[in-house]
Length: 173
Image 1: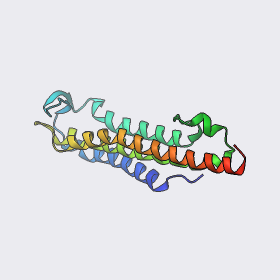
Image 2 (image 1 turned 120 degrees about the vertical axis):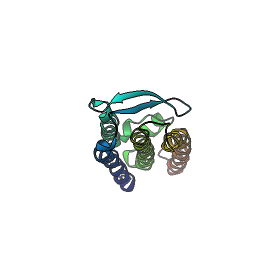
Image 3 (image 1 turned 90 degrees about the horizontal axis):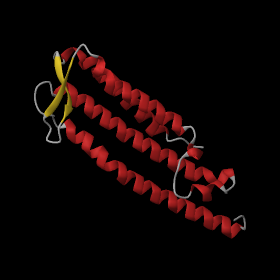
């Protein structure tokens, strides 16, 4: 099965970006820095520089990134509306559905990576004031996630429909 290599590589690059940015910006954050923001962008919680909390975002990005890559190895275990129908097909006929599911997963992974990067940038850039434009970087991927799911589930439905028709025409259904 063809894996979405470009998306996997982008995912890995973005995870490295989160970790690298955290490492290189650590020396520039003040002794007390912002860790949480209200909906208006105002700082509503701070942490001490010497605490491990600063490393929570990069550690989470790595953990979630590894989880995405592990899930990518087993697309047949994904949950989607036509799963039972597709599982009745011969293994070879399932490949286009699994490829599209893998692609969807990696698009979601990239959006989540972008959120992690924007959160880390927001923490570093908001040493004393309100959250910067990076807040939009968190909101935009968050809004995009359900749109991505709907688009991909529609594409998968079209693939399932096409293969069902092919199987019916060939008498394998």
